[in-house]
Amino acid sequence: MIVDVGEQDFQELVIDRSAELPVVVDFWADWCGPCKALTPLLERATTSREGKVDLAKLDVDANQRLAVDYRVQGIPAVKAFRDREVAGEFTGAIPSPQVEEFFDSIVPSEA
Image 1 (cartoon, rainbow, N blue to C red):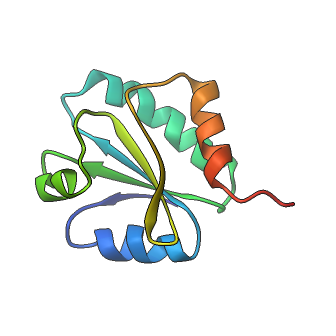
Image 2 (cartoon, rainbow, N blue to C red; image 1 turned 90 degrees about the horizontal axis):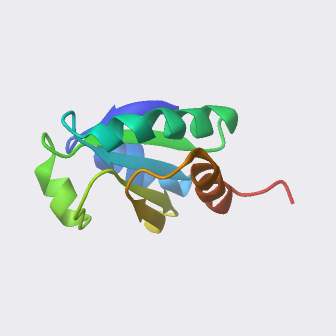
């Protein structure tokens, strides 16, 4: 599932949902070029894992309190939530192989 989130539904769609399966949050802004390059890679990684991880996209300009609460210093910033806590993160646009490795590190394996 890929959704846009904000302050009103962040608790439900990210924190609470992360108790069921990992949720990756993409902290971005419309004016951010690297964000626009990274988002399709995150969407592809989410889709390829067929329901094993959700992607939540959060516009930091519209949701500044959440950006401050989660100490977003630069964007794009990506944080993975598992069991209601941040389980992994990175800042900046990274290449597709590194995005895939990041997702592999947070999505439970079949073993």
